[in-house]
Amino acid sequence: MPARSRFTLLLAALLVPTCAFAGGPDIHTQDVTRFYALYDATDGKPTVQQIQQEYIAQGTPSLAEFARLRRVTAQSIADRMASDPAVYANAKRCLAELPAVERRLADTFARLASVYPQAKFPPVAIVVGRGRPVGMTYPGGVTLGLEALCAADFMNPNVQDRFVHVIAHEYAHIQQTAPTEFEPGDPQATVLRLALAEGTAEFIAELVSGNVGNSRHAGWTRGKEAQIESAFARDMDSTDLSAWFYDYRSGSDAPYDLGYWVGYRIVKAYYLRADDRRQAVKDILEMDDPKAFLARSGWTPGMSLPGALAVGD
Image 1 (tube, rainbow, N blue to C red):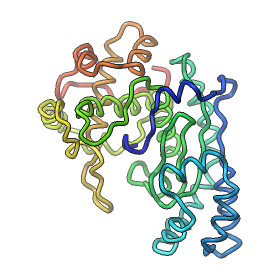
Image 2 (image 1 turned 90 degrees about the vertical axis):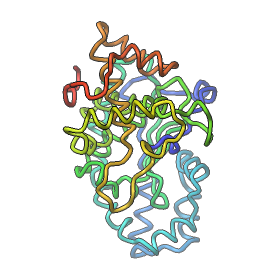
Image 3 (image 1 turned 45 degrees about the vertical axis):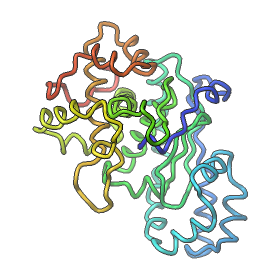
Image 4 (image 1 turned 60 degrees about the vertical axis):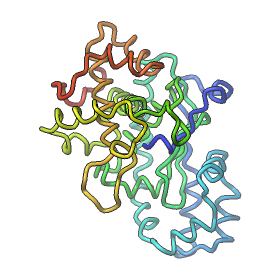
């Protein structure tokens, strides 16, 4: 997920109560259940007033925070339903997959607790929004828009895999101790820093769930590793992120967000080089000096690395 889709406020995170790992975090799906009850009762055409009164006003705290931070209103949902009704109709197939997703996430979170005992486990919430964003990570947990993630089949065509791996990616962001949210133009927001922030989330997702959030990168980059990473090495100190992040174009099959992929490879190189893998996970999630981490990783442009690690590697 793009860094702009997250709120990583460290001080607030320290104040948010989290559940101990006794079966993992709570997973809230009651908002989507209530939305689709309304959707079915109105033949897919609820009014703005109905969306407000029967969905948003009765929502969980996660939905309220998602609405507040991501400009989700009854009007914006109604507008998107009118302009693109297929997004909401198609999302019902993903709704049917959620019980299986929850079962698979139990193993994912157990693995996270195993590799990083300090892990925090605030709730995961699935809600319905205005078609975007896919979700957000903030100190209170991870919130995902069912309809947005369901439509993102360009990331992974398998619905269950997409939900599990994306949630694992976002949950890795919960664990990171360094800030990854920056104002535009902040000199700290370099290509390298953002690549390592997102690459960490991709790598941890692979480690605990079996694959990265965006599985398309593997195919796009095969045979082009040296070319892509040499360009990255030239740009890594730049604060112009446009060539590496947030460059997906709707309907296009062109590669996008390649900074995620390069960062993932740097993090993987660090992990595979480490003698103590558990300490390596701690180092990765608590990274505070991108340049020093890069130097310790042993990464070089185009280096050979294994494919997806099996869970438990």
